[in-house]
Image (tube, rainbow over the protein chains, first blue to last red):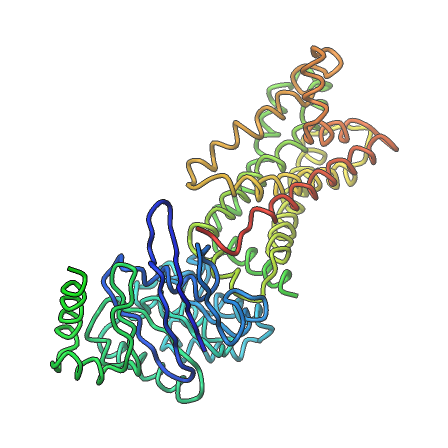
Length: 237
Length: 236
């Protein structure tokens, strides 16, 4: 589904990704976890094809990332909610629906799916941060993309809604959608089918949560992440 | 289709911002009224200046509004997102062009209505033709605004493009000093500034007027093409 090979990205003079290679399988929820500043957003931008890359390749659905043919099949939710603050939730959704040649029915469905039915008539600018990012999520789900790339979609959501959103992600994956979800909160890692652990622009773990726990010899993913970092630093020293 | 949806979206954004709509519609008419009282004793001067202002107002205002609107699109992340959807760059630019041109039609209708109806503006060309030229001038403002927004990172910077890009054109368009009395080199600069033709069109008639309008429209198209080149799907 997504294949990243030897990806090197520089932003300004800083090298942000140091030759990353990984694969995201189809029909699963893959979590991209790492501390802030580790290169999550840069990797995500490379996958949706908006990042200028120095070298290496990113292939999505068999095509180079960012190809015109992929624009119908990849949905992208940026970290800061990229919806129009001076439009209502419904108006935002209907505009994004129109970009995919879809109508009001699909737009209103997506708004209901993220739990914003009652707030549909409100201006996005008047919503809470959590509601705003759900509005942004709704706009990405409308086109029923084969790949959904979500940059920290659950930040600021209340625990009940967060659980609902993860439920929805898994329902989408069960229906065949592939999801790449970034997060800096380790307690979300356990909800993913697969994990990509990223730190300082390097992938330090790429497996199922169970395998990562087993390898590190701990049930706690946060602790497992720590042990992975230490073993890497030990190997480097 | 996507372009029209974009136009609709921009007009809806505008509709939610009632104060901006009110300012867009009322300010040019108010400024014309101010001119009327300034030149109460010399109606011919009022006719000359008000006519030129009917072209300068839509150009300036639409330049400002568009460059800020497009800058917001860039800084809010919506532009990055839009460029990952099936939307083409021309859809976006056409959407903006059409939306603000429609706003300019309404604005121009109010301004010319007040100028001819209440203030007794007297011109050789008909009010309808003047309105048409005013709208073409607004389109030029929109196109240059879309282009300039690419060179601003903040709204502070975007506003600074007004004195850089718009004011020199107003100074050299023949409003303050007739172009025939300018030094040669100033005239040469004035010759390549599109607003010169926008103002010239208002005062002329027949073939010259249509030539001027064509030049202004051509300059708008060139600015739109350059603006399209500044929209990058991939950024550093």
